[in-house]
Length: 301
Image (cartoon, rainbow, N blue to C red; front, top):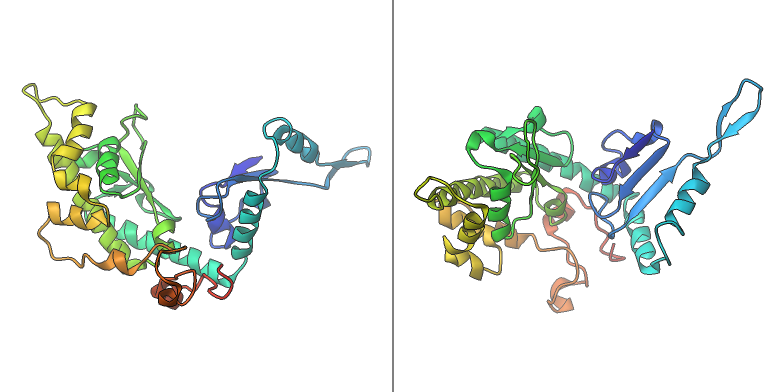
């Protein structure tokens, strides 16, 4: 049996969801999704004794040579040593208590995100979430994932269109998929994801407005018309460089909301600020340290 855990490998590493290793003979994963490592992949396989046959002879697992030879020289060339070191650092992080706390926060945030979306009338495939992802079925909103993805992309919100049950086209699917690991790394907690759900709802309203405006005399629109209108319907979108989620909120809603919260959660990593302002080379959101201290400031991990 082969199990691919590319999307959930970080959660598996932190032991916050069940592991496939108890059941699978081969496990594959990418390393740059929830595991939060460099772009790459890993293959795990069983070694050693497989069984004792009817003749009383030991039968060994034979995956090692087949997989190793398929990878090199079959598919890959020389090793990228810098990527190997990057992965080693990520795997070292994955065995720390701080990393487990981070992944627990990922799940908590996603649960809150899903709950808030459902309270706003959105239908989630499977009726909720048990991991770091939500898959929203947009059919009852009269819009598709392709158009919503384009609006979100226009305002610098990363999401991707996704098929849902009943779809016949992967190019214009009925769903949109979002996850919580990246924003959790920036220090977002439950109340922040309630606001993220608000921005998503605002994007849906904007997508519907653009869709209505781009219908011609025959009440038809083309994908090109829609994509073009994402940039000309509200020209302010193309000149916003900073946190455009704030702009999206201002465009489509008069509701009062704290628009400064993204700036309180800086991107983790090197910044252009002087070292004395950061106290160290690596800046860590203080709320992350308080709620789920997963990053070691002492060694830059």
